[in-house]
Length: 562
Image 1 (cartoon, one colour):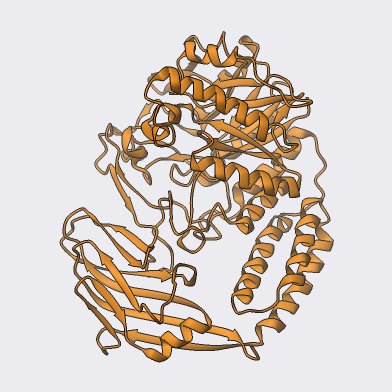
Image 2 (tube, rainbow, N blue to C red):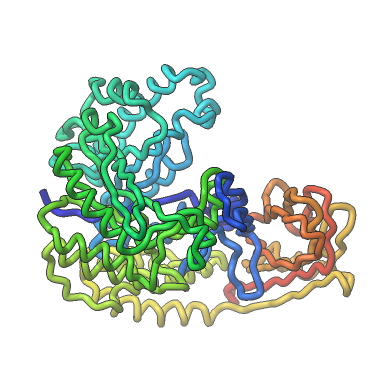
C-alpha cells in the first residue's frame, strides 16, 4: 500500500468570538493519583495576561494564539500546513454522532474535500459508556443498549465519513482506530461481526486497537514488551501511541514534577518493540507512531490519573523517533503523529510561539525520506498558510465594517487551492498582490477610540453589574464595527467560579483559586457576543464576587464613505 502519515487531532477548542464558549482551552482539575508536590491546574482561557497571551490550558502557546477549531479559516490553515509537511490526514478523536466531536469531524470533512486531504477517527470508545450518551439517548442505561448504539455509530460512519472520498481507507477498508477503555472484548466481537450496509466501493472496516505495550525498569534500563490481553486475536491489528512512561520521576531532581517519565532512548526502544509486535500479530495494517513530547500538567491528567512526562528536548525526541522510522521503511505502512494539536498534554506539533515550526519542519524532512519523495520546497513555504490565514482575518474585519469582500474571498479561495496543489510560487505572488489590495481597502477605514474607567465615573460597578455610561461610545458601538477589552480586578475568595454576561452571552467564565488576594485581569469583549448594547449597556456579574478598578477600551472603525 501507499505509505501514509496521519496525525491525531484533539479537541474541541473554541473561542467566545466564534462559538460563545472556550471549551478545552479552559481547564481546572487535580491529578488524583499523583504524588507530585504540584498536582492541580487552573487555566482561565478568557483571561489575558500582561504579556498579551491568554491563560490557556497549555504549556506552549499556539503560534496563531487562541483560535476556534470550528473556524473554517483556522481549519484551512491547519490542513494546508499539515499537507506541506507531507501529512495525509487528520484522525479526529471521536465519540458518537451526537457528541461535539462529530461536528468537528464534519467541518474537517468539508474542508478536506476542498483541499484533497483525508479524515479518519481515533474512536474514544469509553465515551459511549459514560453518562454523556444518556443525555441524547435516555434509554441508554444498560451496556446492551450502549453496545447497540455503538453498532449504529459504525453504520453512521460508513454512511457519512467512509462513503466520502476523504474518509481514510486502506485498499477500500475504512480504518477505525479504537483508543480503548470502553468496550469489552465480547462487546467488540459482537460489533465487529455485525453485518453492515457498505457504501459502493467500500469494504468491511478494519478495527485496530491501541498497542498494549508495557514493561519493566531494571536499574537504568527499560524493557518493553507486548502484553497478551485478549484483544490481539479479535482485532485487525494494533497502532502505536505515546511511548509508555515507566521510570519513576519523584526520586529524581530533573523529573520530580512528574510521577513517571520516559527518555528519548525509551521512546525509540518502544518503536522497536512495536514493530516486532505488529509483525508477530500479523497486523493487517502496520501503524507506527511518532511523539514529540508528553506533559499532562496543563490538564492535571484530566482530573484523574498521575502526572507523566517525555521531554521534548529541543525537538530531539521527535527527530530520533522519525529517524527510527526512516531506518525501517519496509516495516510500517503508516506513521501516526501523536499529535497535531493536543496542547493539554503538550504533545502538539502544530507551530507554537515556544518552538516555532521546528516539529513541522522535522515532519516534512523525514516524512519525505520515509515515503521516498522528492521535496523541492523550502522551509519558508511552510509559512504560506499562516500568511493566508492573516489575510482571511483582515478581510473578515473589513467585512464587519461593511466593505464588499466577495471578490477578495474568491481570490483567497484560489490561493488556498494553489497552496494545496503545490503551486507555491504562484500562491506567494498572489498573496503579495492581495496584501496591497487589502492595505488600500484598509486605508478607507476611519477609527474612533474610547476609554472608560470606574475612577472617572464613566463605568459603574455595583450590585452585581458593570454599567457603561458614555452615550457617545454606545451610539458608536451600535453603528460601527469595533474591538473592545474590559479589565478589572477581582478578589479571589473561595474556589468557585464567576461569569460576566451580556444578555444570554457569556463574556468570561473564571475559576478562582481562593488566594484571598486581588487579581487583575483583562478579557476581550467581542462584538459577535453583544446585542443591542445601546439599549442594554450592562454586563451582569453572575456569582458573589468583589470587583474593582474596572476599565473599558473600544476601538471602533467603519468605511469612511459608508
